[in-house]
Image (spheres, one colour):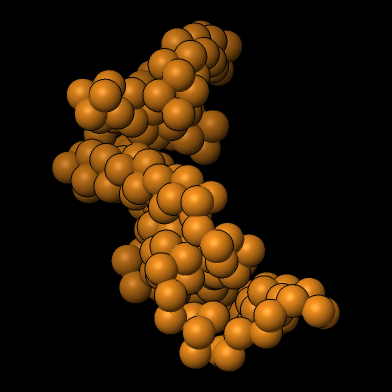
Length: 178
């Protein structure tokens, strides 16, 4: 994972500089909210990925990964709470249908040992799966909050600045941890 950040960081920096040069825009101004959102998003993404990695060693891997896909419904909820953003009724129906589909996919194959719903939901793999879904949702919403908190620049520029900051935070944080 650290190698991914180390190699991505210069690519993002070059892309950002090229976009600034090609578009003729100035760097957008940052705010304290930008830094809070960007750092929280970066750390949340790292922790969510760590939860998924832990799932690889669990017996209920399929159930855990399935529950990690709750990030869509959690993103809608967290986006409403943190940013005040809503989804349309049709989008909400699609999210709920997708969530029900994910839960149905967590059903064990025929012939496998069937688990009760309680055993499926209340075990370590499910906990890691739900936690990763929650952390990925927080990360997504925080990245959106970071781009919205920048003053000036088009969407591409704001996204590139947020991506570069997140990648730097992840590279430094994981580098210090290693």
